[in-house]
Length: 88
Image (cartoon, rainbow, N blue to C red):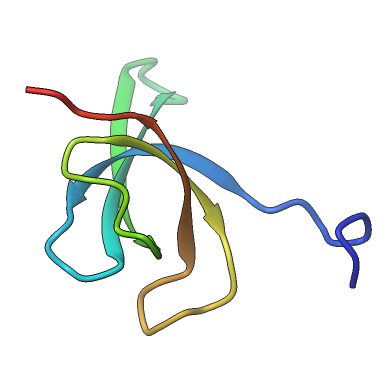
């Protein structure tokens, strides 16, 4: 299957919340939506396990992740790029 015929993959941007594992990062993705009945804005966050081959991202970095084939029990995503590196 070539690049042109492959369906587009999902991509998200999120913050690295854990870098303790080798080649694996835990990414928190936050989204907001308005409650349909009460019109209150609700913030929801999800955590995704992503593969980072070169261990390039660190704790606090803003990264982009892309869906991929299952790599392990929990990993279904991979880090494509570091958007903003966290500095103290």
